[in-house]
Picture 1 (tube, one colour):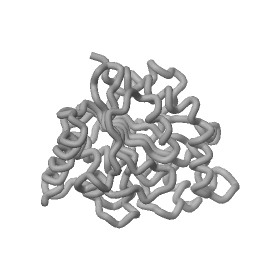
Picture 2 (picture 1 turned 180 degrees about the horizontal axis):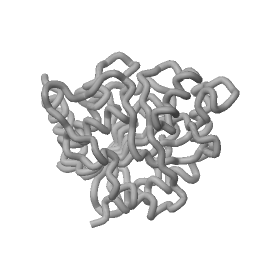
Picture 3 (picture 1 turned 135 degrees about the vertical axis):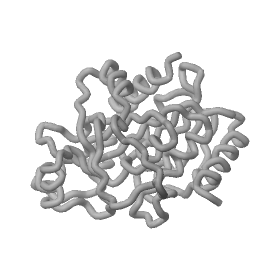
Length: 267
């Protein structure tokens, strides 16, 4: 089955399981963002991801492993993806972007991509959300194959970023660099990212954003700064600090994301 056919099958199965025939927006919850789902709206159905074609159980601590359909205050419906597949899991690029393609097949017009990431700006603090203005794809791959030349200018939709900053004027912006992982970046790699214009480093999001643009979706990206990147901080990196930063930021992150999503779906 082709990737697009698999996405169509997944969208059809979600519709059959939930009774919702059109999903308007997708929200992918990255590391540190899991509890944000409690603030988004009324849950319609929560389905283990592995029960839907093309998805798999989450392989990363801090992800729920669920696909949840939520009714928003606007009356629109969101697909909340708590089972992101990362490139380092070895399932291939199509699996990484399957959630985005499923959202597009289900009728979504917008995708919000969140993640937990390392920051290069010394004044950023763990638990601080930062909007993604642009990205640098350091995975040496793409979800697009063949001679389809997709324009990535303003990939992270300026209109959506302005809405987010209207909701939270103190939100800063950064340039996200995606590495393949699963190991953390070396201090030299982080220094390289800084020299080429990056200010955030992580292991997700860029490939999904490219697939979203290919599918015609608008994209908003938000990173939770969970730590300063290697060489910026003088302590070893550990995934437990990612989870802890998310836990400490929960009282702020969930309501913030809910307010932003509400504004993105206003009619």
